[in-house]
Length: 216
Image (tube, rainbow, N blue to C red; front, side, top):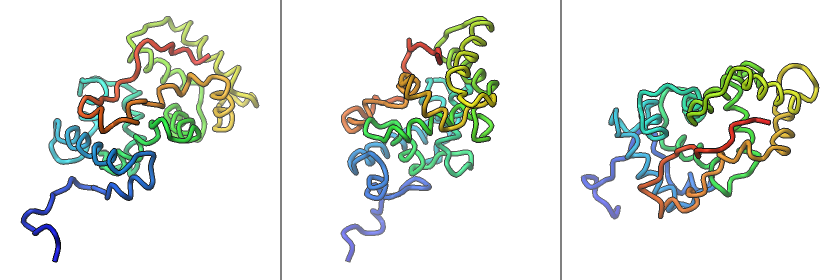
């Protein structure tokens, strides 16, 4: 006989996964996954109220504005949406957030950052993609630079990162570039994820302000 009758069974959101399994596959403990579920429910019912995180709800969590268009937010949402079905389920939420955990392997952070810049998903970061993302990050930080300065940032990045001179940056070149410029993945670590059970419910994924967006 079960310890809980069916009429008292807990109703979970669509795509719910067992916290024990998620803890075994991520950098989170089981208690942290359970705390993340409370956060997930809060976010997934903030606008649409269907237990799934839609892009507007994701933007609201990131920027406290559900209507603000931002390439950076779009790319992060797309990478969290592992199934590519336009919404983020709980398992996707936990697995993707795990990359930002202080204990997550650096290789995962580097690969995620590479995918952020690889806008067209070709397996390379091309010059125009880099420029688009630099402009998006500057815009999110409310920093406005002239086109000449942005071009200088892009050019300097390619001089340093495009080791074989083919006009694009592959994942191996990106790894080498990040090794020399570790600040590039600074925002890939959110320290308070280590204490999510204590930080909830004030946890919001706001990018740090005031960081130098220069890729050089």
